[in-house]
Length: 142
Image 1 (cartoon, rainbow, N blue to C red):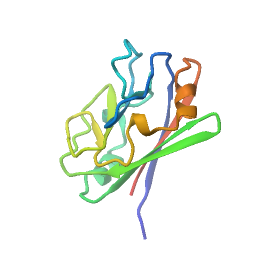
Image 2 (cartoon, helix red, strand yellow; image 1 turned 120 degrees about the vertical axis):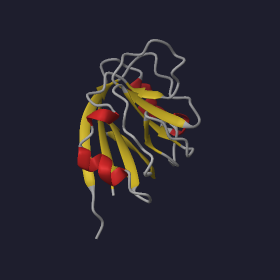
Image 3 (cartoon, rainbow, N blue to C red; image 1 turned 45 degrees about the vertical axis):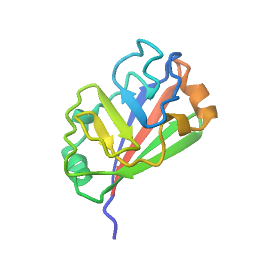
Image 4 (tube, rainbow, N blue to C red; image 1 turned 30 degrees about the vertical axis):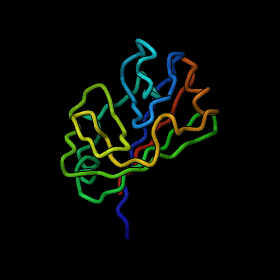
């Protein structure tokens, strides 16, 4: 039997979202300041890493844990899957970053992900570029 935890929260789109980064995806509590943040896919998020439930963080720190993020917009969705690691700290009060690589810092949600911002469906990305777009985000850990 697989033990699964889910956390659902909301964020918003922004006209400065480009989602062109080839190795990361970022969700932030902040409003976009420039197009240089080409990994950002959601802004004004209700949650950052530090806000996640303790049980979610505990399971995500198990080596071999599987972590997913489902990005839902206007009936369309994209799934991104990666791995947890015992070195994850969930320190960030502003962001969560998904990484294709194995790099870990206080902003890292998961490593070895199967997608980066540039890999996301461009129809979804076009919706993420609208500030009125409400984005449903679901994190899964198993």
